[in-house]
Length: 76
Image (cartoon, rainbow, N blue to C red; front, top):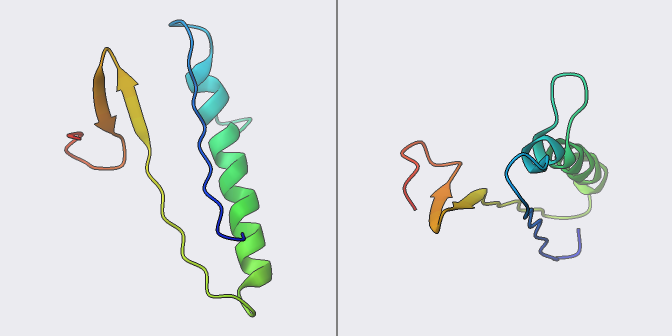
């Protein structure tokens, strides 16, 4: 909330649980959902005293190809 950047880099073998850890499931949200919940809780708390801008990217690197998972055409 003080102008910091953060990166989560999930690396490991296929089937190791990276996607589950990041996204979770319907019963238990993963790291991304938990992070968004906390971020927007803090934004709601600070919005009366701060001007806040949020930007993000969500990339997948697989077999030396980079995909932007937010863009609908999946080209990066």
